[in-house]
Length: 421
Ligand code: CA
Image (tube, rainbow, N blue to C red):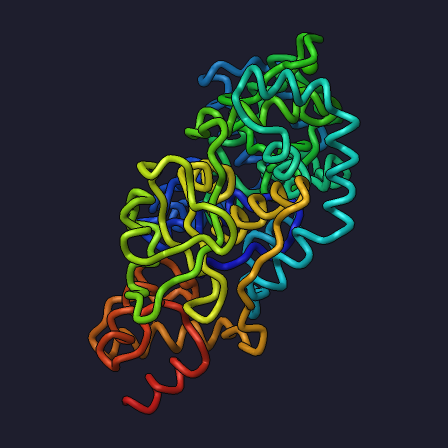
């Protein structure tokens, strides 16, 4: 399972990149990946004062086409924000298991709120459906996940956050790129600098777009000439639909189906890298928990076991992958899908989550990776993040000891590995 993001509101685009890099082979994210020499650059920068750094960056920004007056207005009174540095460097010891994450992401209050928003924005959502081919429930579900329907956009000055990340963050190259993009937005006149607010990581407005994503996908849908994802729900919703559409969203296709697996199923097939037509999954004995799998048996899908073989199982389609482009976390995409279904009165699961499982702490995840390494498996760099490589290494180990190869880390698995030393 991918690590659920630590907060229900706001995609942690920067975090998502860190996670996707840590688990090679997973899908691309909403952001460009940071370069590998980031840490070195960061160390070099720590010898510079912020004012010195700003002067150097000003030259870069002007070379990139930012006007001096744009730059100087954006940076007036800007100093580094230490809370951004703290957030950037924090490595939480515990992350919530997926079922707890879903409980708050798809809460009854959020579902009711979302249903109200569907009614309030019905006209715009109809136009958005016609223009972009994305169903209203999916758009509103993302709105709910990103900013609680515009109520929680973050309150930080985006220029200050990104300048801090570019000056002393872990990925200064990434911060610089986003900062240039943010200055381009200001120069374009979409938003005054005072209203350009977002998360500590630079995710902005009701859609929580990072600046480069904004520059590619934000649209002016209410026709006032500005792409206002902060103040205009029409712009925010259409921008989200435009992003989903550009990420391969197919009209009328469900994000996925809860399924039942047959006895003796090979759990190693539950891997996002394995994509098969529905007809093949059906041939393997997989059935929908309710109704039919898909009208189109040629629709491709992957099998997802978010909490291992003892929890609910899903066949997820290319629309699920489109949601992952927004935020590269399977827990996030599952929450969006289930929230969208809940807005239509569905979204209930038949399978039971293994709620008795105690999630592994960061130290335990590191220990698990190191034990796998010492036993000759290849979990990738031991970083405490259970990504694709670690899941594959767990599968191989599970197969070697005759256990269901779901690639899901548990305390029992860790104990087995310890005993095997
Ligand atoms: Ca507008």
